[in-house]
Amino acid sequence: MTTWTELEQTAQEAELVVAFFDITNFQKTVRSWSSQEMINFMGEYYEFVGEIVAAYNGRLIKFLGDAGLIAFLPEDTDNAAKMLLELQEKGDAWLADRPLRSRHIIKAHYGPLACGLFGTRDEKRFDILGDTVNTAATLASNGVAITPQLFRKLSPEMRQAFKKHTPPITYIANGDSHG
Image 1 (cartoon, one colour):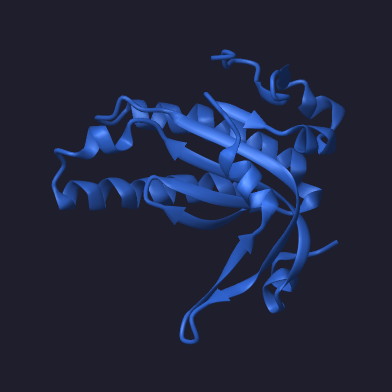
Image 2: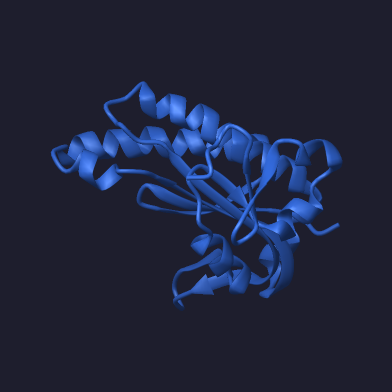
């Protein structure tokens, strides 16, 4: 069993669950906000998301404005799926309590990637790179969507939370429409 500490020691190949999340209509909504309103909102949002990810043993790799990149170790695939669904449910409720008419788009994939400390000579951060990351990033989603590769790694019980969606084949949360 690989740990996050081991993955951070040297750049290497690993198999991980990779997930992206994004808030819909964010830029249109916040155009009129002051810098301080943006600072306050994003500070609260980052903490909110970080707590959900940590509760399921995930690793928040980075935030990209109102979006983010998350990873999970192979033994935590069910935790990853539970986190995706909780982030959608609680995250959408959290957004509804604020002045945003937005919701979360969440997409995830499982596979090999390169990971390790990357960056400039003076500043390196843990990151994940490769086709698995790109596949997760470009997956079509109207809510929560996972690839067949991740679906196959889930326990039979966890698979019940998703349904097949084609084409291409993806699995979406039972509560989401095919859109």
